[in-house]
Image (cartoon, rainbow, N blue to C red; front, side):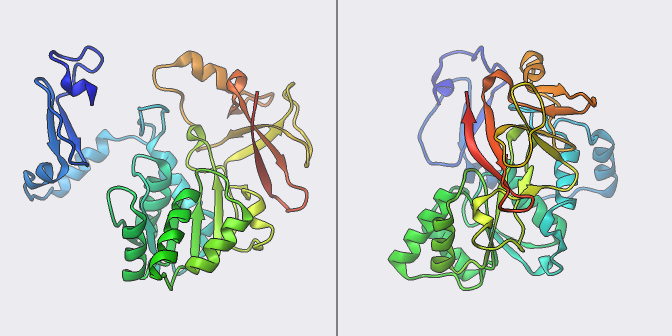
Amino acid sequence: MALCDEQGPNLTLPELRRVVLLASDTVGGEHVGVQEYGTSMSNAHPGSMKDFMFKQIEQWVSVDDVLNPQFTLRRHANAHEFDQQRPFRRRRNETKAKRHYMLSLFHCFGLVMGFLASFWYGSSVIVPSDYFNAKIGVDYMVQENATVILAVPTMYIAEMEVVAQTGHRPHRLRTGIVSGSTISPSLVKQVQQCMGVGKFLIAYGMTETSPLTFITGLEDSDEKGPTTVGRVMPHPTAKVIDTNGNTLRRGERGELCASGYALQKGYWKSPSQTREVMKRDENGILERSAGSTGVVEVFLNPAVPGGTKVLGRLG
């Protein structure tokens, strides 16, 4: 919050006028207004928008407009197209699902896979808190009879600790979705035993190709599923190449390249970095590769048909 304590207009962010705090920290600044979230909401006034106002907004927004200018240039169409192509879209009872998550909505995991996917299918959404709190999360899983949980591995660990300490155990969780980092088969089994999760979907993507490039399926076995990040999503494409750009065979390790509708437009105000990692292959297809900044080392797992395993970073 150093920006708020400066005694003059901040040269880095000259347009910054107000900061809304989720926490109750006491900070202040002469040129930047600081307000707690509760105060900000209490000052809001109820109202409604007429249909013609929504139509005006629709005319202003294009599918190619920038969705997230903070780092990468995403398009509004990316999120919409993804939610129509989810591999678990085949489940006909998604309208009865109750999705529980405590993920940041400024990140694609919470926003697209959590909120927008639920909105698209008419699922209920359970967001217990505006920050992660394992105790609150478990309480609401039980109270609201959550059926689907989205979390990163460390969140599952914290929630299992709460269950072990309190004995307050969810009873209706049928699906767990995990992303953000790899999850071990042993941790998957622990979560299934402790929290009663029936099946896990394990996802992998990069910010530049978000939200996902790979995901496992509900039909994958508990033994083989956690050892991979699954198959390529419908419509995105991926390949593994060597240092010369040649496509490798199944079981060989190399650099992961991804392309398709999920690919970003580029890095915000950084054409040089965009050119470094986004290149066209011999067929003219634009794809994301890590270039000299380090690449993801993967191999197509020969033991799992269509399975891909991410090993780490090279270079």
